[in-house]
Length: 303
Image (cartoon, rainbow, N blue to C red; front, side):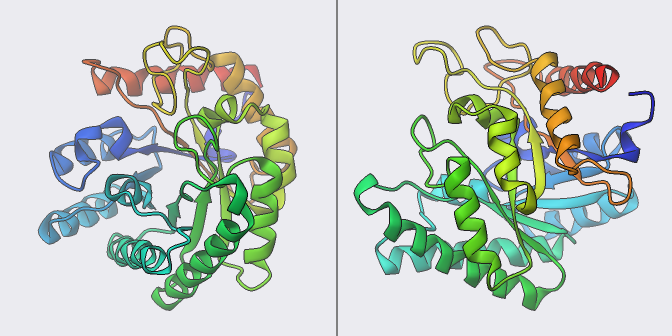
């Protein structure tokens, strides 16, 4: 592809994965956000909760000054607290919804265009009940987000039986879930993630084509799934080309081709495609980011 990426997509970076010490809403947030804001490779930064009000205001000013768009990831809020948005215990489900509403408040303060989350664990015997609980929770979040302004509520598709063991899940169930929510709400969509496809045992085509009408956000990354004894096994988002991992230039190229095929990548309304990469062990986060940019450049050149 000779045309610039920016004509077809806005490249983003998930701040709290690249710099995982910030994932709990604390740590060197300002310093690391500034690094990303200074890099004009990225049009979008994906942030999560920031517990300190002054830090949150400073981040908003920084990204506005840098002319960046913001997306908000509520996933760490659920994963770090153990709350489950599709919990069959109604009090626990409501606690998860209340927490994510706090995230929507912060997303609003940061000027985010989208708010993402994930579904929780489930039991096979009560999968349908869990799905209905998830739909109720999602509709509540969509209502709340609409009160705050023009913000999409986005569910990220995760693995269902390897690491996160989330209800959503396989492409067929992701589609059914999105159909149910979109019967009543038009501010909802799904997020695909290249990192999760091997964990789902789905190809890019199998994962994306069934949900193409509902796809509003995409992530790029890697995983290790061949053997539980291997380093970075599971949903750890190691760098591209990590030893014994699944994704590198070839797989990212195929992923982008499918995103083009379904019309997600387009020049009329370029969507967001963000890196979700995380340093493993003592790896330098900035080198991991450089790896991701280099791999995307190579993949784009092959299209």
